Length: 204
Image 1 (cartoon, rainbow, N blue to C red):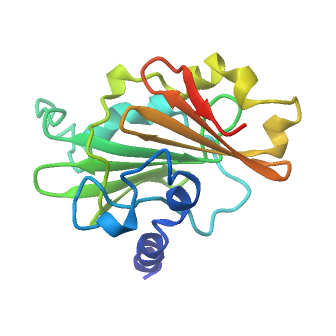
Image 2 (image 1 turned 90 degrees about the horizontal axis):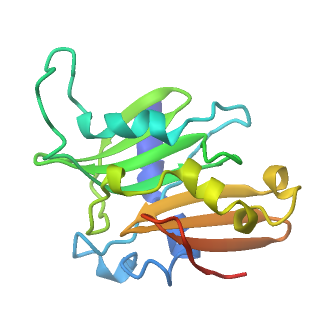
Protein backbone atom coordinates (compact mmCIF):
# COMPACT_ATOMS: atom_id res chain seq x y z
CA UNK A 1 0.00 0.00 0.00
CA UNK A 2 2.88 2.32 0.77
CA UNK A 3 4.25 1.90 -2.76
CA UNK A 4 0.82 2.53 -4.24
CA UNK A 5 0.42 5.71 -2.20
CA UNK A 6 3.91 6.81 -3.16
CA UNK A 7 3.19 6.38 -6.87
CA UNK A 8 -0.19 8.08 -6.55
CA UNK A 9 1.21 11.20 -4.92
CA UNK A 10 4.22 11.06 -7.23
CA UNK A 11 1.99 11.36 -10.27
CA UNK A 12 -0.24 14.03 -8.71
CA UNK A 13 2.75 16.24 -8.01
CA UNK A 14 4.66 15.33 -11.14
CA UNK A 15 4.28 18.72 -12.83
CA UNK A 16 5.46 20.87 -9.94
CA UNK A 17 9.19 21.31 -10.39
CA UNK A 18 9.80 21.92 -14.08
CA UNK A 19 6.62 24.00 -14.47
CA UNK A 20 7.87 26.41 -11.82
CA UNK A 21 11.51 26.63 -12.84
CA UNK A 22 11.75 25.64 -16.48
CA UNK A 23 8.70 27.07 -18.20
CA UNK A 24 10.72 29.13 -20.64
CA UNK A 25 13.66 26.77 -21.32
CA UNK A 26 11.41 23.73 -21.74
CA UNK A 27 8.62 25.02 -23.89
CA UNK A 28 7.29 21.51 -24.47
CA UNK A 29 6.44 21.23 -20.75
CA UNK A 30 3.10 22.96 -21.15
CA UNK A 31 0.01 21.68 -19.31
CA UNK A 32 -2.24 22.96 -22.11
CA UNK A 33 -0.63 20.53 -24.57
CA UNK A 34 -1.30 17.27 -22.73
CA UNK A 35 -2.99 15.79 -25.77
CA UNK A 36 0.38 15.30 -27.50
CA UNK A 37 2.85 12.78 -26.15
CA UNK A 38 5.98 14.78 -26.87
CA UNK A 39 4.72 18.04 -25.43
CA UNK A 40 3.39 17.29 -21.98
CA UNK A 41 4.23 18.90 -18.67
CA UNK A 42 6.43 16.69 -16.53
CA UNK A 43 8.51 16.96 -13.37
CA UNK A 44 9.39 14.89 -10.36
CA UNK A 45 8.92 15.17 -6.61
CA UNK A 46 10.64 12.82 -4.19
CA UNK A 47 8.59 12.22 -1.04
CA UNK A 48 9.59 11.11 2.46
CA UNK A 49 13.31 11.29 1.85
CA UNK A 50 15.41 11.63 5.01
CA UNK A 51 18.48 13.79 5.35
CA UNK A 52 20.69 10.69 5.36
CA UNK A 53 21.10 9.19 1.92
CA UNK A 54 23.59 7.44 -0.31
CA UNK A 55 25.17 9.37 -3.16
CA UNK A 56 24.62 7.60 -6.47
CA UNK A 57 27.05 7.91 -9.35
CA UNK A 58 25.23 8.41 -12.66
CA UNK A 59 27.89 6.43 -14.51
CA UNK A 60 27.26 3.36 -12.34
CA UNK A 61 23.56 3.08 -13.15
CA UNK A 62 23.13 4.55 -16.65
CA UNK A 63 24.34 1.40 -18.49
CA UNK A 64 21.61 -0.68 -16.78
CA UNK A 65 18.69 1.57 -17.67
CA UNK A 66 18.00 0.10 -21.15
CA UNK A 67 17.66 -3.34 -19.53
CA UNK A 68 14.70 -2.45 -17.34
CA UNK A 69 12.60 -5.58 -16.80
CA UNK A 70 15.22 -7.87 -18.37
CA UNK A 71 17.17 -10.46 -16.38
CA UNK A 72 20.49 -10.38 -18.16
CA UNK A 73 21.67 -13.53 -16.38
CA UNK A 74 18.77 -15.45 -17.92
CA UNK A 75 18.90 -13.55 -21.23
CA UNK A 76 22.61 -12.71 -21.73
CA UNK A 77 22.26 -12.27 -25.49
CA UNK A 78 19.08 -10.24 -25.51
CA UNK A 79 19.77 -6.76 -26.85
CA UNK A 80 17.19 -4.28 -25.60
CA UNK A 81 19.24 -1.17 -26.32
CA UNK A 82 17.62 -0.80 -29.75
CA UNK A 83 14.09 -0.89 -28.36
CA UNK A 84 14.55 0.88 -25.01
CA UNK A 85 14.78 4.66 -25.29
CA UNK A 86 15.61 7.08 -22.49
CA UNK A 87 13.47 10.18 -22.88
CA UNK A 88 14.10 12.14 -19.67
CA UNK A 89 16.54 12.08 -16.74
CA UNK A 90 16.25 13.91 -13.42
CA UNK A 91 18.65 13.88 -10.46
CA UNK A 92 18.07 15.20 -6.94
CA UNK A 93 20.37 16.69 -4.30
CA UNK A 94 23.53 16.57 -6.35
CA UNK A 95 26.81 16.98 -4.50
CA UNK A 96 29.97 18.73 -5.69
CA UNK A 97 30.97 15.76 -7.86
CA UNK A 98 27.65 15.32 -9.67
CA UNK A 99 26.46 12.34 -7.64
CA UNK A 100 22.82 12.44 -6.55
CA UNK A 101 20.63 11.11 -3.76
CA UNK A 102 18.33 9.70 -6.46
CA UNK A 103 18.10 9.46 -10.24
CA UNK A 104 14.86 9.09 -12.19
CA UNK A 105 14.57 7.99 -15.82
CA UNK A 106 11.61 7.90 -18.19
CA UNK A 107 12.26 4.88 -20.43
CA UNK A 108 10.18 4.14 -23.52
CA UNK A 109 9.88 0.53 -24.68
CA UNK A 110 7.65 -1.05 -27.36
CA UNK A 111 5.11 -2.37 -24.87
CA UNK A 112 5.22 0.31 -22.18
CA UNK A 113 6.80 3.45 -20.79
CA UNK A 114 8.53 3.03 -17.43
CA UNK A 115 9.50 5.36 -14.63
CA UNK A 116 12.78 4.00 -13.27
CA UNK A 117 14.09 5.26 -9.93
CA UNK A 118 17.51 4.62 -8.41
CA UNK A 119 17.91 5.65 -4.78
CA UNK A 120 19.15 4.28 -1.46
CA UNK A 121 16.59 1.46 -1.74
CA UNK A 122 17.92 0.31 -5.10
CA UNK A 123 16.04 0.20 -8.40
CA UNK A 124 12.28 0.72 -8.60
CA UNK A 125 10.27 0.41 -11.82
CA UNK A 126 6.71 1.69 -12.31
CA UNK A 127 4.54 2.11 -15.38
CA UNK A 128 4.51 5.70 -16.60
CA UNK A 129 1.26 7.11 -18.00
CA UNK A 130 2.47 10.69 -18.42
CA UNK A 131 4.20 12.39 -21.29
CA UNK A 132 7.84 12.87 -22.09
CA UNK A 133 10.10 14.95 -24.35
CA UNK A 134 10.27 13.91 -27.96
CA UNK A 135 14.01 13.46 -28.42
CA UNK A 136 15.75 10.33 -27.13
CA UNK A 137 18.77 10.65 -24.84
CA UNK A 138 21.77 8.64 -26.07
CA UNK A 139 23.95 8.10 -23.02
CA UNK A 140 27.12 7.57 -25.05
CA UNK A 141 26.66 10.95 -26.73
CA UNK A 142 26.29 13.15 -23.64
CA UNK A 143 28.74 14.49 -21.10
CA UNK A 144 28.20 12.86 -17.72
CA UNK A 145 27.02 14.92 -14.74
CA UNK A 146 30.40 14.39 -13.08
CA UNK A 147 32.27 15.81 -16.06
CA UNK A 148 29.69 18.57 -16.42
CA UNK A 149 30.37 19.69 -12.85
CA UNK A 150 34.13 19.46 -13.35
CA UNK A 151 33.96 21.55 -16.52
CA UNK A 152 31.72 24.25 -15.04
CA UNK A 153 32.80 24.28 -11.41
CA UNK A 154 33.24 28.06 -11.20
CA UNK A 155 29.82 28.76 -12.69
CA UNK A 156 28.03 26.16 -10.56
CA UNK A 157 29.71 26.93 -7.24
CA UNK A 158 29.87 30.71 -7.08
CA UNK A 159 31.31 30.65 -3.55
CA UNK A 160 33.15 28.11 -1.41
CA UNK A 161 30.16 27.88 0.91
CA UNK A 162 27.82 27.09 -1.99
CA UNK A 163 28.82 23.41 -1.94
CA UNK A 164 27.14 22.85 1.41
CA UNK A 165 24.68 25.74 1.56
CA UNK A 166 22.89 25.15 -1.74
CA UNK A 167 20.66 22.41 -3.12
CA UNK A 168 21.05 21.24 -6.72
CA UNK A 169 18.70 19.39 -9.09
CA UNK A 170 19.63 18.36 -12.62
CA UNK A 171 17.28 17.58 -15.51
CA UNK A 172 18.31 16.30 -18.95
CA UNK A 173 15.94 16.65 -21.90
CA UNK A 174 16.14 17.45 -25.62
CA UNK A 175 19.91 17.81 -25.68
CA UNK A 176 20.22 20.15 -22.70
CA UNK A 177 21.07 19.92 -19.04
CA UNK A 178 18.98 22.13 -16.75
CA UNK A 179 20.63 22.71 -13.39
CA UNK A 180 18.51 24.34 -10.70
CA UNK A 181 20.41 25.67 -7.70
CA UNK A 182 18.48 26.80 -4.63
CA UNK A 183 20.00 28.58 -1.66
CA UNK A 184 21.26 31.83 -0.21
CA UNK A 185 17.87 33.44 -0.79
CA UNK A 186 17.60 32.84 -4.52
CA UNK A 187 17.14 30.23 -7.24
CA UNK A 188 19.58 29.97 -10.13
CA UNK A 189 18.94 28.16 -13.41
CA UNK A 190 21.91 27.18 -15.56
CA UNK A 191 21.45 25.55 -18.96
CA UNK A 192 24.22 23.50 -20.59
CA UNK A 193 24.72 21.76 -23.91
CA UNK A 194 24.40 18.06 -23.06
CA UNK A 195 27.08 16.96 -25.52
CA UNK A 196 29.80 19.54 -24.89
CA UNK A 197 28.93 20.68 -21.38
CA UNK A 198 29.17 24.32 -22.44
CA UNK A 199 27.04 26.83 -20.55
CA UNK A 200 24.42 28.21 -22.94
CA UNK A 201 22.32 30.39 -20.62
CA UNK A 202 21.68 31.36 -17.02
CA UNK A 203 19.50 33.70 -15.00
CA UNK A 204 22.42 35.13 -13.05
